[in-house]
Image (cartoon, rainbow over all chains, first blue to last red; front, side, top):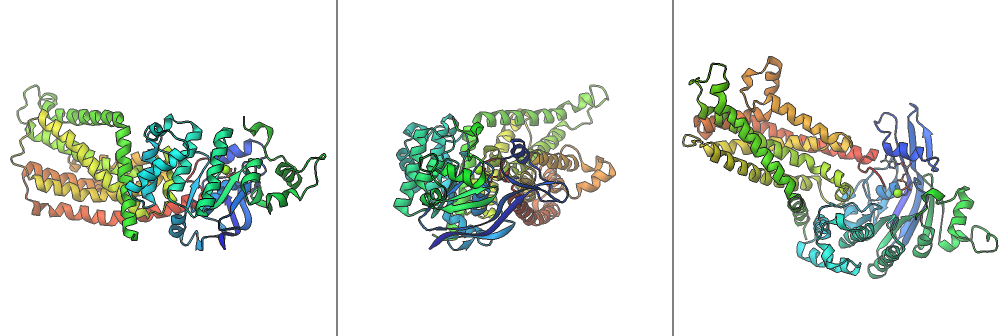
Amino acid sequence: MDAVIVNDLYKQFGKRGETLVSRLWKRASSNGKNGNGSAQGNGARPVVIAVDHVSFSVQKGEIFGVLGPNGGGKSTLIRLISTLMLPDAGHITVLGYDVVRQPMKVQERINRVSVEASFFKKLSPMENLLYGARLYGLNAGDARRQVVEILTRLGLEKRSIYSPMEEMSRGMQQKVAIARALLSRPELLLLDEPTTGLDPRSKREVQAVVREMREQYGTTIILTTHDMNEADTLCDRIAIMNSGKIIALDTPAGLKAMVSPQDGRPPTLEDVFLELTGEKLVKPEEEEP
Amino acid sequence: MTALTLQLRASFAFVERNFNLIKRYWAWEMVWLIYSTAESLSVSFIGLGMGAISGNGAAAPQVNTGYLVLYLLIGTLVWRFLSMIFYWITDLINIERWEGTIEYTLMAPVRRLTHMAGQTVFAVVYSLFFTGIILTVTTLVFKIDLSRANIPGGVAMILSGSISFIGIGIMASSLPLLFPERGAQMTNVFIALLMLVSGVYYPVSVLPGFLRQLAVYSPATYVLEGVRLAMLENVPTHELWGFMRPVLLIGVFLVPAGLWVFAQAERYAKRTGKLHRNG
Ligand SMILES: Nc1ncnc2c1ncn2[C@@H]1O[C@H](COP(=O)(O)OP(=O)(O)O)[C@@H](O)[C@H]1O
Ligand SMILES: [Mg+2]
């Protein structure tokens, strides 16, 4: 049974006649060619094709990876699935509901974690999560108990559960973000670079939670990353996305079988990406410290 | 659990969150309270000083300072209350854009009506409380005689007026969706123009022609006039109906209009990717 069906999905930014050309775009394009399907619009206005006729489906209980460079269209894809953006063309069905026509039905069943933790900085994790829980109709008593339970399991000290978020490290904040998503018991969990910028230890903890979610609750997970190892070890299948297009989709082993061994060592996903695009997945300057 | 319970719980989410925010930002709220109180006091002192600054020399006994002080005080308090409701409601999107939580709220299974209702309940309750404190302080400073005032009538008038300000607030709250960078500043323009034409500190009759024509469309014009008649002239409540009716009519029109405008703005933001700034 498919949890998510994406059919010929298309999204572009900067259509003619719309006041846009956000700083985002400018920044992305001044960073050098990040491999985006950019084209000139009719009115000489730059158009970015963020998601370019993408189709795939994700099975229930699957951990599905979307691997690609910055600006490849991963976040846009996630936003389209999570009802935060409307597609220009194509359809997305989540657990049997169309994201455009039945957004509430979809919203009840999904949650999302993004790169930036996104909290009320002066509020504590408890206050932030309680707010989140109420939005999903949980009652406050249950929610409070679960917040403590989940956060302690993720390794937060009792004390920090009640102090402002701004006093926490990024790794900790990211764990709270994951807790927020877990609280609503989503059937589909969208993880948009959940481990980017985390130290190796936090990274592994987050990855463990992801596995646990699937094992305990059978949660379907779509995870974007530009960390090849993460994709390799965590995902059942991986879609490689570049310039808004899915250029390959297979199991990690299947992807690696696409290229011949390099200098005697077994191929990595990086080799696959290089072979398919002629570019390195992570450019040296954006490699993490 | 029924859909209604879910939505009620969700609407309480906004009340509770705002309350928590105020608790954490209490120092800032105190500053704001002191600022507002000082402002209301200083405006009302104009009334006391009127004799001296009228240009007729120190003794100008024609001025009924008690009346004038109350006239100005009503202006500043009614305005404080209505504009506070407006600001809290316009913060619907803005506060979350600033904190970066907007996408999480907008992807939750919450009807926009529920969202607005929560924010509105908080806005009205908190504005009542806040204005109440200023009222208490100012009445202590100016020993105001309210024996000849129709207080229930005045309150009814203000509450009727708040409905239209809720509508204007909802409409203006969509600005940050359309203009991520400037939207919040633009809401200030709304309120400044309303203040100019509504006769907060003067009767609208002193305005030049074109501004006076605009005054007719401002719900605050009717609210202020109605409250003043009730509090200063002891006009009975049933005679205030002439002021309540236009205000309620404007409100009944503005609230659904605001919701409609907001829905369009939300669609636009979701289509053009204006909800997020980065990531
Ligand atoms: N809201 C937006 N407005 C304009 N352009 C955008 C917006 N969001 C993303 N883009 C552009 O779309 C492309 C894909 O971005 P994104 O989906 O964020 O990629 P990724 O998550 O893979 O880094 C980039 O060129 C980016 O600049
Ligand atoms: Mg991204």
